[in-house]
Image (cartoon, rainbow, N blue to C red; front, side, top):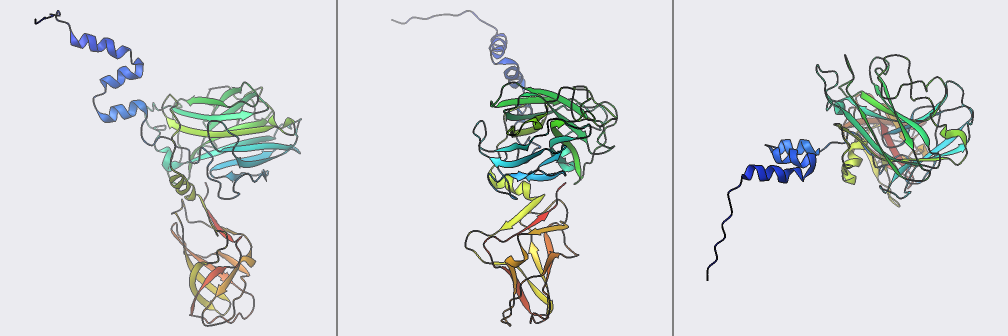
Length: 400
């Protein structure tokens, strides 16, 4: 026996519209997206994080879990992140660590000497500088600018309280500048912080080249000269890094502060952290700083070249990654870790001076090495500079 069931006609568009509501706001927008590009824009797919090494995986200078005392100057203590200690008598260290939590690595700070009473012009802070070429993703400075910029990060500390993070311009003496206040609620608990910076009104001129475009500053301790900002309001004069009530993180020996999962993206909302491969992240860091370090037990030629005189050697060094600008600063482990080799002589002189010569660029460098006295090298003959220690390294700087 055959049974036939008839259903009355219905409006399929109306039913689909009702179904879309169950997907939420973004789901409804995705249903209405006409192109794949529209869909990608809605979910912030593709490359989005303007921060390099935001998960603190790369530390070429100091390696893992090696506490370094933070100086009264802007220095890098983990790739791409600066720290400065300008407090009166206080001291803290910085290191790459694995404290557990949402990310494997973090930047860890520890107070080693307290500064419980800050002078007006003293402070402690962390900073990140965004290169101008990367800042071109932002329409600030363009007529009718509408882009918002969202910064998200994870923090943990045993000294909870009020903290501040700010955005500074690269031109016009850091202005306009906006400070955003955030509160770490509980001690020793990971907390995700999200702050959004709206586009400033009027002219906003920042570098859009290989100089820095804008910077973020995380305030840890502020004297009275720097804690008078109004939360969420751009200011065009009077440099401030925080608001009233900023926690003095430097007040007690043993205070710690962990930072990781730093992401900066164009838009009003924070999306999931963009995980890049280790190799890609390392290459991005090497644009600003790179270290060539020997693996354990290896001795090999670092630079091949020619003896110019019996005591002077010139060679070509190929950078691992093209750098932001031609590096003018070169570092090394110790001069005694290197020596000059020529096959036509048994003399292998230890280097007395080592540096970057004129004519270097962003991809290849001309390095020179000199040795005191008559070393026995034959001018015009080839050779190489060889490491003589497994602790040897050379590094090059092109930081912002």
